[in-house]
Image (cartoon, rainbow, N blue to C red; front, side):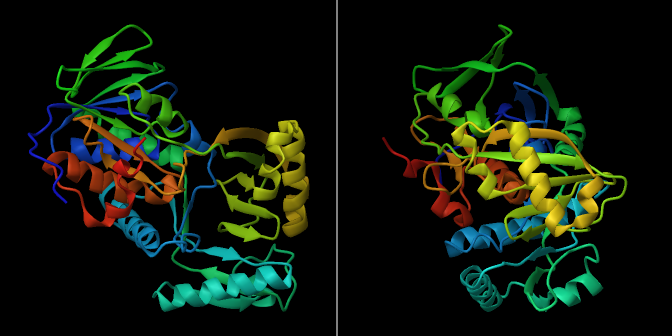
Length: 373
């Protein structure tokens, strides 16, 4: 889809340097565009660092176009690894999921059948097979069906962002620890400047709003209404002398994944439901740890080290908002939940749109203009 007559941008500001912002910026610097990376904190230390960081399409079946976008990004990760080197950020060891009640188990197996029909690799194993072949430390009953998605992975988001930013250094300026206070426009409404909280004013041709939970506020600076959900999540990190699991998993009531050589990440939608009740984060962490120990007894001697409650950056209808906003020339959005999965493909497609003025058909269902006040 043609967005309009475009000239090559000379200087682009990316607001928010998480997985999406760094991916867009890196792709643009590869084509010689001068970038300004702007973040109120430090790169990759916001929601990117406090996500379950599971790269998948198995949880994205609500709309086929959304599933296809996630599958494309899983492939884009393979390409990205070959270009920048996997180092410490890429862990493609698959993903496990099982249930503990008949209704949830039936739903899980039906989803597995659907995914197989869509040519997505899926295996159904017993708990005994999983313990013998994949995860010996699990306390999963012998006969319980466990779905294994061998092409899924987890990503160390902060390490990947750091890598992308460092590779962009020749064509990029960094403004970290400074929030965006204003976005100035010309008389024709096109983006002209970005004003930061430290008082500096940057002349730019375009801005990319990749501000995650703050994306609605940034959109408001150009008079744009971007409706977002309020959906906070709690993530806990625990330290252990030896990590007893090798891949991310959705066990009943708890999500567990490795986080390097001495750390494990925990999350649960059930625990997230307690956030709005005002439950103490330390109690949320204790509940997560307790659930994890039931699934992986070897985590019994682990120690809670960090817990963070973050609001997920989810547009109101649950789908990404990616691309140009025609009413504000030079303004683009890259806002979505599942940013860890979608970062590489959104980074590539949005950079191509900025350079060519043409939107890829893969983004047709996810254009920002669907949110019209």
